[in-house]
Amino acid sequence: MVAKAQNIHSNMLQHSDLDMICLCDAVDHRFKKLCEMYFRVNHEPLFPPAHLDKDMMLWRTMFLRHDEKDFRHTEDEMKSVRRVAEWTLQEKCKLVNEEYVPLDWGDDK
Image (cartoon, rainbow, N blue to C red):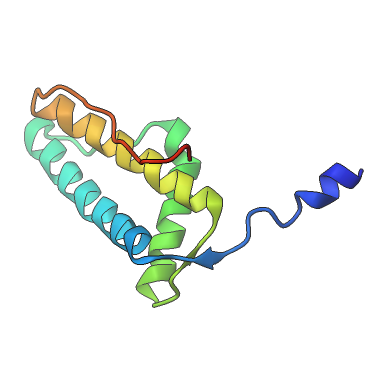
């Protein structure tokens, strides 16, 4: 019971540095461009896979918070924006027939 109580507040809001703010904004921009490109090529809208539903929701929540000038994020939101960024890059590479090279985040998160 003690171990469970220690993890209750492990996902608290923390200050977003400029890198995180720019990453969130860049992923939004690239996701919109990907959707436009996908529609132009395939004549149908792009739907993210079901396994990204939670990540999309967390990333959009953080993006809306940043849009309201509340520059904070949780650990889960940070991981989610990275997964969305990876997926966006993978999909773009498929569309333009480029080799996918995973993003190097520089840490283990």
